[in-house]
Image (tube, rainbow, N blue to C red; front, side, top):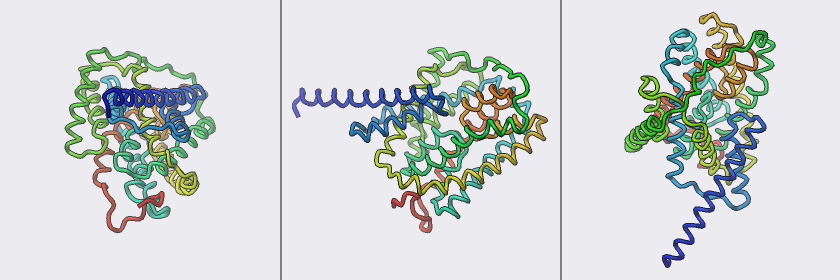
Length: 366
């Protein structure tokens, strides 16, 4: 192809990618206005699925994928500040209960999906993990797993929690006290130098992990470096909101690529599995929340929101609206989110590939 033709084709491709990202950002903005949980990511997914159905969809370039993972990992690790570590020391028994609870919830849901619904173990693991959706979907796509059924199970869990939990909290006696304001943690934005240090370190470690064939290597590398630098106090501040939002939008575009050929029948077939998984997981979550409330000496509504597998932002806002302790709730969600993000890639790696006796893919794809 002549140089001029290649240049024109490259410009058309660039314009196509820019238009797709703009559509994703618009979808995220609309969802944010509507108050949908994980708005920028979920809205981007829906917008890009529609964009692809209209015939405009494009595969996301690898550099953009890596950028999305790098930003998301950096954002996750930024929540582990020295102040957060000090707050964690106030609730050791509750946090240990949380760690055991996350394992129990995941295993309980996995047993339902593998034994009752006939799912493969690796698909069941990612559908059962309570939260950290960026990591879940990154690994699912990296492993070429059943993204649509996994997303359906996670979506059902999140939707029911957001719509039902507030009423359950009020019924349990929450909402009567005056809401405590956030302590200001998370309001400081990282300096350009500090942010550059975290991003560069995360990318370097991610490339090393990629050579070691670890799942979602860039995401994990950025999370580890960001956690280490923020926890030690060597760098401070959150990822600039605009950059963090851009990362969520790009993650949404990345996830949506697997939904372009989505068969609605797949989602309908997944609903019984999603409902059973939700019931099993949340019975266990309530049980562990009751235990944590007794051990930590906090009110049950605080523990219920702290153990609910919803997004950090949504749960923090819910805590404030219901007059709960946002510090207790926030520390537990940061710990859960970070723990899953650090451990899940290695656990998924142990389950990599399908054993000879494993059941078929949940979508029916071999």
